Structures are given as structure tokens and as C-alpha cells.
Amino acid sequence: MVALYANDYQVPDKKIVINLSPAEQKNNSPIFDLAMAIAIMGEADEIRDPIPEQAAFLGVLSLDGSIKPVDGMLPAIIAARQEGFKILYLPPIDDIPLIQIDGIEFRFVETLQDVIESFSGQLTAFTSTSTLQNQPAEEVTFTHEKDFQHVIGHEQAKRALEIAAAGGHHYKDRGKEYILPGEGI
Image (cartoon, rainbow, N blue to C red):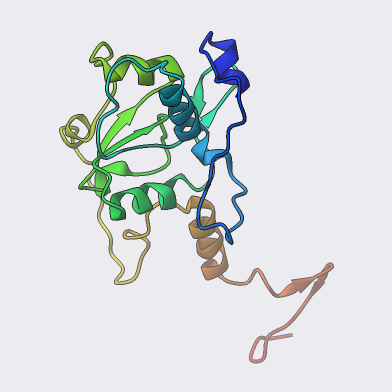
């Protein structure tokens, strides 16, 4: 963990094995970087204050100690809530409507140092769900029975479906235009 070295944290001088289960499922995302760094720091006695119980940590840890979001944050957030976590440390993310996810407190942190300071109560500038819920919600009026209002995230997929639903996009093939039955010549 180069980010720990770069931020002057001690890393144990021994082999570190982290088991991400289930073992048969391929883990191809760095979404657990922050959680692994916190676990290593805890074992190396670099964290002096207690880590909040029922807390989870999500995010990519950069070499400079900053925490970044990654694809797959929404499913991980929902899974954390389903597993019974009450506090979730994660980087600020703009494209996921977290107001619609209740039952978990979000603590937005930008650096590894922010996370460590929050354990001692020094950092109180993070936004939690109570702050999010006090913000006025945008007025949205839907006129159709079927829409995407209950689909959280997946902006690119929703956009692709909207374009496909607009119609006519599949009738052109390499510059040739097809005439549908019933259309004039």
C-alpha cells in the first residue's frame, strides 16, 4: 500500500494477506482500497481512536491518500445497507441520488487523513444523511405511467433506452435507408 507509505503511516514488515470472499467470485475493482488501508492501519496500531462499529469503507485510494469513487458504487452502497452497516465512509459522488437510500449514514471523506480524523471527532465537516435530507428536493412531474424514476443511477443505460425508445435508429444500415411497409415510395 504505497498510499500508506506516502502519507507516513507505518506498514507492518511482514506478509499481509487479505481475504475477499466469496473466493470464487472475481474481484476486479479497487473499490475496497480504503477498507483494506483502514484494516492494515488498525493492525499496525496507526489508528489510536476506535473505529465506529458497523462502519464500512468504500473508495479507491490514490497514491497521495485521496479517495476517489469508482464504477459500481451504487451496488456496493446497497449491499452495505443490506448487510446491516449503519455508517458508510465514501468519497463525494454527484451522480447517485443518495437521498433515496435510507437506513445508513453517509460520511463523505476526501482523504485518508479525513477518515482517521473523523474517528477522533476532529473532522466534523463531512456531510451525512441528516444534512442531505434537509436540502429541498427538486420538483419533478412525471406525465407517463412508466418511467425511470425508481431506477437509481445507471445514467448511461437509461439514456441508451431513451434513445432506443425514440425510434427509427435501427432502420439505417451503412448508408442505406430501409422503407417500412406502409410507407410511401
